[in-house]
Length: 194
Image 1: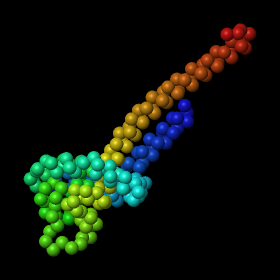
Image 2 (image 1 turned 90 degrees about the horizontal axis):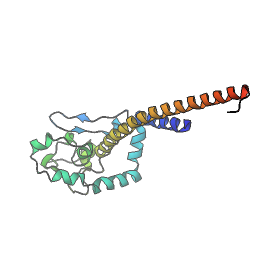
Image 3 (image 1 turned 90 degrees about the vertical axis):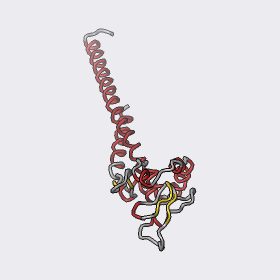
């Protein structure tokens, strides 16, 4: 039981430490946040940045059709920029605001006239093809980490509650065991057999 408490404590501390960094940036005049991969802990970034891991994750995101649900809303630009997008929708289904692409629909953005190459890698990665969009963008990986961070924080909080419960049960068990041994020892010392 003590080892279980120790392991749970270590995992909970690890979850809080790993998810401590990172938050979405509020974009002026927008209802959604944008996410940057560099804002998250190295440990999480390395897991997501690994090509093998990202290929599987990208496949799951694409398979979840999170961007398809966004494209079916038929919103005007003003409606879209005031929408509350999930971190994955913000990172994977649209180009970053800094790209200054022209809005056609939720998942179709045209590069401005004369656009050749940008210093922002996600602007170069963006494609209107529904199977590509921004699934390979750094902002997509950051959006996934924002979701992951939120979920891990919830798990860590539940772990703290469970840990407190386990410590109470363990303490009661230790006290009962100690009292039982003390009572048996007194009985043996007096010559009784309990």
